[in-house]
Image (tube, rainbow, N blue to C red; front, side, top):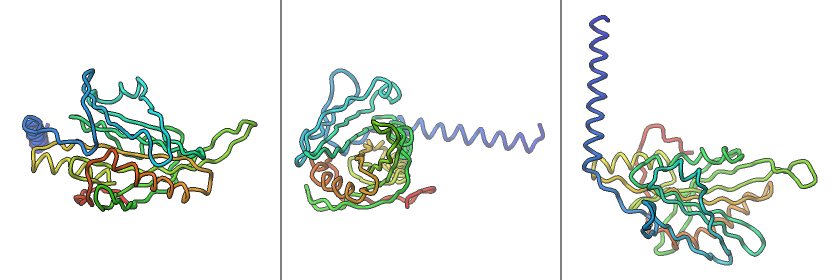
Length: 248
């Protein structure tokens, strides 16, 4: 190997070693931040219980337990909560919470899970929802409009739409940006020695084709009543500038 190539290889190895040393140092001194959602400890494992309200407005609900395969794929200190809410007219809203522990891989980009369930994302946007409890603030939301073909009982298929709203919350921040959340993780580790304990919150509702606006309005009305029952962090977020932020 020629001398310049040896110098380049040595420099690369030095940088990799230095980066690994920094990561090990941060891991040794870091402390885990507080969640931005209500929780209670469990005695059976490392996960936490996240109490979603049983009733919101005129919606009844039932808890949806994660399956064994889902739990096996996630770090052992990842906490999950999921409830399916149903209004008297049959309109359903699925609420999910994924709370990370010491492993940031507990939470992935929102774009990943919907296509795996057969839904095509046809539109994306960010929006805000005005909250009045426990104090006035703007809740940032990412929104996907989705579609899929559903089989009909007598044969053939019908196109269904879906409204998917999501956001991320830690002990002192809220954002609808995946890249903004990743930027805050780096910032808090370097500046505060804290690994923020982010939660990924989502709501999903199916609707007939062409009824997306009406479904969105109903979901946002539901959120205005439900979020104060399980989320403790409030306030308008400030998202750090990060390379590759793909927000629209």
